[in-house]
Every structure is written in structure tokens, then in C-alpha cells.
Length: 245
Length: 176
Image (cartoon, rainbow over the protein chains, first blue to last red):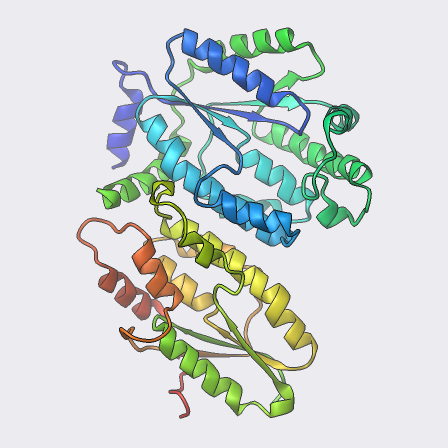
């Protein structure tokens, strides 16, 4: 099975699937840039699939109802998001990559790592929960300061209970809690950016400047060969795919 | 006998519950805390009302949900009962889930890491019976009909493999 996977992804006659992740704190402008990037990719002839964080039809309703009740512990929050991610990997991301499409993930594994560790969970254990790991070809990290993130989010709305990290800060004021929590999240993101070699986009720049930077970085990154790291994820998924026939 | 956590595992949901009832009945009334059953959080119940287009969960996804449910049971049922100095029976507990995962071909290391947060029980009982048609549905029975199976595999074989993966340590038949 591993040979079949290698052959498919190294075949020069077909466009191989590409996985691009957009990561960063709330208010960093990821969604705006993701939409601009998708439009540009389509104009370049790519078939694009977008997947957003916490969006599977199977698990999202379960998470949503518990968030409304403020009923999740950090452990439950982590495990339910891992279940949602796994379902999207198996039903959306891997099938699209296998078909040679380009997948844009608006938040990926690193969102879970940064938030769960900021909630006090152990990085190594959370990483293992997400095995078999699927590594993006490119991770764009939208870097902003906690102050900028806080201003951009709170200018538009009041952060919700979990977004503000009120489950772990024990602060009653969501804005104050958001600032404290996002500072922790950004600290974790910045550590992950170094370890996993994210491509950092200065999200304090103008929208146009960021977009041009992303295009240029993508054109360099898309030439990279397929990552052998992803073999286990594809082997796992192909076994399931055969099961569904 | 001191208060503590008793785990009852098995693939036959009805028999696991009967064993749990027998175990809790042995405990002195003042120390009797109750039985913690799977899906106390209701998330598997919610899963069953999902549209078919949402797709079937894999064994891995199902076990992530089981771990979330167990975390809920520990927080709201098991830990508070133990803190009151009473005995609680978890039926099923960790071993049932690990047996299901192994039967579905998942690595033991992934399964062990997934349940790292669950404390070791004071006593553990394994029911080795096969599922009956009537009676309460256990996690393995639910899981085996919820996930997609590899070609050539059957739900009955999956349940049987899970049963074989359950380590037969202490066991006691209901009321025995």
C-alpha cells in the first residue's frame, strides 16, 4: 500500500494534492487572506477544497451544544475537537488530496496544540492523540500581537466563553480573559512556528501586502516534493476507504 | 472494604451491567455510590441522530468520543463519588475501549495514550460472554454497527476479536 501511495504522489503526469494550512490567533486576518488566496488559486487552475476548524457535520453539533452550556472541561474540549478533526481528515481532506486537489485548511492541527496547551494540557500527549499525523505542505502563520488580536476581535463583538478562555482563566470579564488567554495561545503558536517551520506572515501589514506575500511563498513552496511523513495517514485512510466500498 | 473505583469490562453490554449491579450490591449500603455507564454525557445518543450524509465515524473517531465521554463520567460521576468516600462501578471502563480499538486494528500505544487521564481502578472484572440479542447495548456492540468494516470482516468477528483482547484477570459471574 505504501508503494501505491508513493507512486501516486510522485507521478509527474498528474497534479499532486497539496495541503495548505492557515494558522494564527483570532483577529489575525486568516479568513480574509484564505478567501483571496482561494480566488487566486482557482484563477490559476487549481481545484480547491476548503475545510474550516470544527466544521464536520457529524461532530460539530455535539461540540456546539456543549459550548452553549459551558459544559466542557479542557480534556473534553480537546478530545471532541480531535474527533471533529479526525472525521474531516478522513472524509474531506485525504479524499481531496488523493484526487489531486488543493486543500486549504482554515486552522489545522496547530490550532489544537496551541489552544490545548494554553489550557494546561501536555503538548506531547495532545500531539499523540492526533496520530497518524498529517503534515501540510505549507503552514502560513499569521502573526499578530495579543493587543492587535484583542482590538480586532473586541471591536466587532464580545468574545464567547471558550474563545475568551474563561473556562481556564476564571475571569468574569470576557475581554480581560480574552487578552490573558490569547497571550498564552500566541506564546504556544510562536514556539510551534519555530519547531514546525511555519511560514510567518506579518499580519500587521495591509491586506494587499499580505496577499502578495502569500502568493509568492506558495509558488516557492508548491514545488517541494511530497512529504514521506504523510505515509501513515494515507495508509490508515486507504484501509478505511476500502472498508467503505 | 474500602471505598474505591471498580471497573467492569466486556463486549456484552447487558452482561456488563448485570455484573456491575452485582458488584455494587456487595458494597455496604452507606458506601454504595452507584454505577457509571457509558454515554452518560449523551454524545453517542446525539451521534445516532446525525444525517447519513455526515458520514460514518471510524473506530478512531469513535474512541476519541468514548474518551471524551469517559472524561465527563470521571468529572461528574466517578471522582465526586470517590471524594465522598463511596464506591462507584464504572461499566464499562477503559479496557473495553482498548479491546475495541485493538480489534479494529489501532495501535496499542495510541490507545494507551488516549486514556492516560483515567485512574487505575481498585478492582477490575471482565465479563467474557458474547452479546445477546436482547438487553442493553454495550459500547462494543454500538461501535461494531456504527463503523465501516474492512472488506471480508463482519461485525460479529470484530466483537469476537474485541472479546479476545480483554485480559481475563479477576472475573466473577453476576451474584457469584
